[in-house]
Image 1 (tube, rainbow over the protein chains, first blue to last red):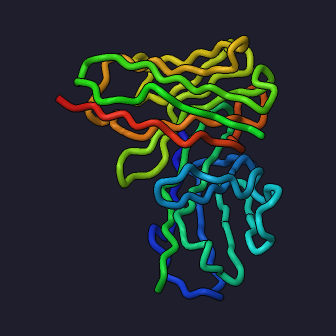
Image 2 (cartoon, chains in turn yellow, brown):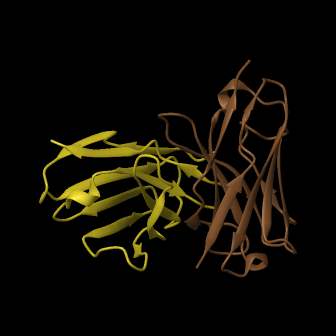
Length: 107
Length: 120
């Protein structure tokens, strides 16, 4: 099974900061990676698919990069609405796995 | 617009069974794979099942394989999750989600979730 290691688990930040979350796969998954945002009590929301494709309607301050085993989600100029938990998910070769999540919280 | 509404969650004793349903609307249901993802209280996301658009292929993680079974009725635009031999660690909010492809990849729309509590 492919394991996803996501870090940091908690990311204290200020409004206006640039933040980066990293996800590492235990083996190459090409670019088969998605990023989700989840707020308390709500369902996850798709932000990015195929490692770097921004979902329609998602602000351009969100971006994804990487391929193979190393991936990152960057939020430039963090907004109050961005304080949430973020998950990566691989979907390579009919297997699925989420990272453990990164909570972006107020510093 | 795309809507997914889960139902069937409840409190159940260990070892018992439960069947969840996810009624959908607003998209061509028979063209898309569907997923079940769960989230234990205060924990992260865990995929539970993926079923192909025509129901011919199902995929499960080892944690539920042999106990959970996913099915769909394309005439009713509904996907199901039959959960047998439930364990305390199966307690979670269960989400159904629409895949973007017919065979299984990532999910672009999610339901609001239905809670399952396994407790004696």
